[in-house]
Length: 430
Image 1 (cartoon, one colour):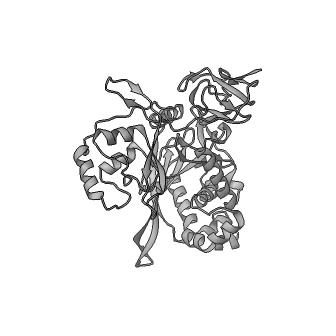
Image 2 (cartoon, rainbow, N blue to C red):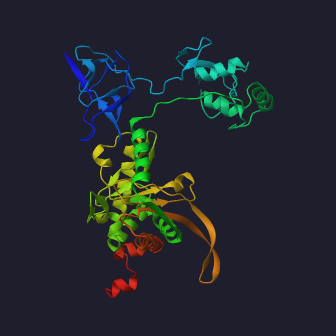
Image 3 (cartoon, rainbow, N blue to C red):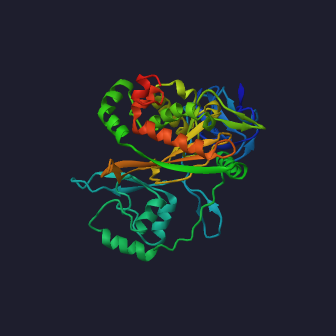
């Protein structure tokens, strides 16, 4: 019996997807529910699982644009065997003297490992390009100081060694460094040409559209992170013991957004034709950097969640996005977004709105800086905040006041439990 492998539906508005890669070889045996292929849409990467066990026959090559429902392969259920998964990291193509490109399998190179007994051996795998680079310049393949922390040597490791970026010391290092520097130096003229994924192409189109179709401005402020840092330091251990995961910074900012929105509801709105739509809920988009590109999974009804619930949701969605397990539904919608460039060391930036939303909050790195506190100079952990907004729907006063409200809540997190009010206002019901 033969079962067709079809491209799954990727959403109502998606009519084409790209067959990104096969996770198994043609003719391999697969088990039921085994992951066999990845497809890229303009919103996410989706996984195709085998509907039954059997031998797979691939009919459509990687990189082909296909429509949902199209048959891309078959599974012969009459064949039995052991599951066989494809090597997900292909060896890079090597250019031969004739100019043709060919792929070679990685060759394990046996190498004597420096152990006390002088007889123990281990296997170091050298990729074809790395080996060719070493052989071309007469460098020994058994040289293990290129990347002493790994048993796999890649072209990147060799080039890093050539540039002098070593990860460890070794007695013979000076002579080897000189040989590499003289042989190759920093005069590489190589290029890589990679096809843009459907997701990255769509992100590029949307970013350009935002710049052209919105009146985007950005307002800035700075926030003292002392209270949040002290709270995390004091309760982190108990938090982990109770919930099983760490307490991060993002969840505080999500709660600060949800508590600030009722004071300035336009920040949570969007334009639909000639109407301004103001949702009475807060669906917060969390920008996540993944190997496939930027994704923005959505925390729905974040205004009704506790801070631990928000933290759990952030961790779950981020992990699913990075592991290509995110669904289209989890990426759809959102009324306002937040992005954290600080994890990459960004001091300040102007984040771009995620349409059709009208605002996005940008977090940045935390730097200890001298600030004036009640007439005295103190060193405080400070973070710059940026709010990019669509001036067509959000006025300057509203955007600035909204960001100030977020700042107040972060600097005094107890207010998040009091609907954004200070203790006196809450007690007096003002």
